Image (tube, rainbow, N blue to C red; front, side):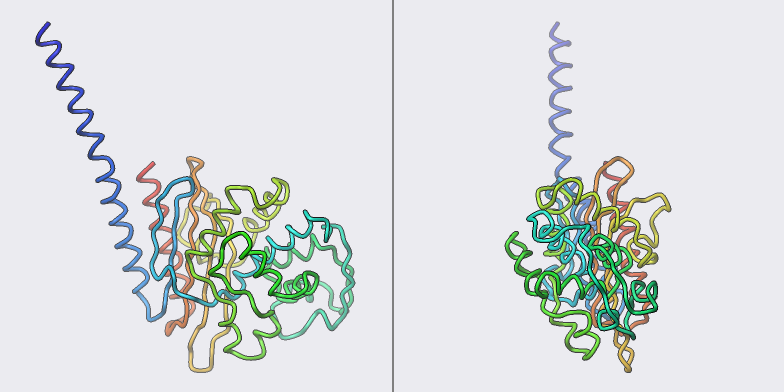
Amino acid sequence: MHLLRCSRRCLLLSCLAAMALLPRQASAQLDVLQARLDSIAASIPATAGIAVKLLGSEEVLSVNGHARLPMQSVYKFPLALAVLNAVEEGELSLDQICHLTPEDLLPDTWSPLRDDHPGGYADVTVRELLRYTVSLSDNNGCDVLFRLLGGPRRVEDYIHRIDVTQIAIRTTEAEMARRWPVQYRNWAEPLAVLRLLEIFYEGGLLTDGHRGLLLQWMTETPTGPQRLKGLLPPEAGVAHKTGTSSIRADGLIAATNDAGILLLPDGRAVAVVVLVSDARADRAACEALIARTARAVWDYCLANP
């Protein structure tokens, strides 16, 4: 009987000791991932802002997480949130028809919407404008939606009202195209974009139907296949929004960005934001940095179920 009590006591002490080690082990593994992210961010001459969070946990890692970096088309994600909020408040309808003219469908900008209506005139619903803008990153569609809402500041005000304040949305796509410095007025801290993704994904901002619709468009997007998705398994679920600047005459790339949700095989979700700014490297190197970040996060999550 004495030996039995001793065995049980030893087993209990062993279990308690093992449990005490778990936080230390998790912390050590996070330190390894942080070091990996630091190394990836420093791998090219650029300012790389990275923010990562396993949703539903307190695990947040970042590199240059509070840097103010140009968003480019990543800002179409908060634009879509603001438009869908206006729909839910009855100000707009997804089935509302917008009458577009050649003045709306500008040349010399990325616009599948314009390409699909070469005559320059089109009747398009708000739903279709959102799909073009989010899934196909259409610049003309983006600016039409801004006009429907009353301008970029309306989107910024909405984002700030939900307590994500370190994002600035000040200019349209047309304005950014006119002068190189203007794009820097639309900036975000990587940690702020991460927080916005978290609030959106975990629910509460939009109805389930509108949340699902936006997730669908972000998942079906063909943009940036070599970014967050670049090194992940083909079956990996990724709901994301890219952002891409032009390349200045001296080779400077202001923005190569991707921000989204990685859906893990076990049902967990992790938000990953990578904003690569002012790069003195080619586009492929910027995209490889984003892909390596996503893969490092993916591997860490699979190794720590």
